[in-house]
Length: 144
Image 1 (tube, rainbow, N blue to C red):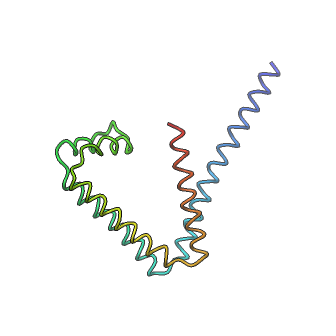
Image 2: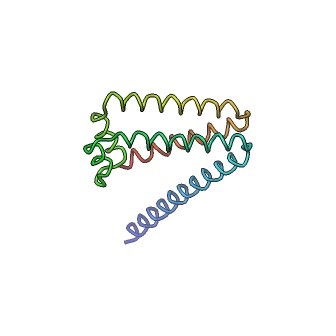
Image 3: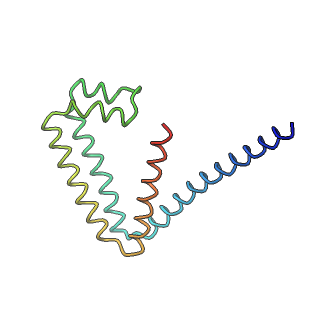
C-alpha cells in the first residue's frame, strides 16, 4: 500500500511540474513577443501590418479562383488545416500554382525588407520568437 501511495505521489508531482513548465513557456513566449513589439518603430509596425494585410489579400485572391471541388475541401470540417492543404494541393491548376508562387515571393520580399530594418537587439528577439515558433510547431506534430 505504501508503494502504491509513493508511486501515485511521484506521478502527481511529475505531472504538476510538467504542467507548470508548459504554462511558463507560454508566458515567456508572450512576454518576449510583447517586448519585441514594443521595441519596434512606427515604420516597422506599419511594415508588419502591411504583411498581414498582404497575406490576407493573397488568401482571398486565391480562394476566389477555387473550383467547387476545391471549395468543398476547404469547407470540410473533418479535415485538419494540414489535411486540407494535402487534399487541395493536387487539385490546383497551373494558374493557381503560379499565383501561390508569386504570393510566396512577394511575402518573402516584404519579410526581407522588415528584417533589414531591425537593429541587432530586435534581430536577436525576432530570431528567438521564430525559434520558439519552430519548437512549438514540432511539439504539435509529436502530439498527434
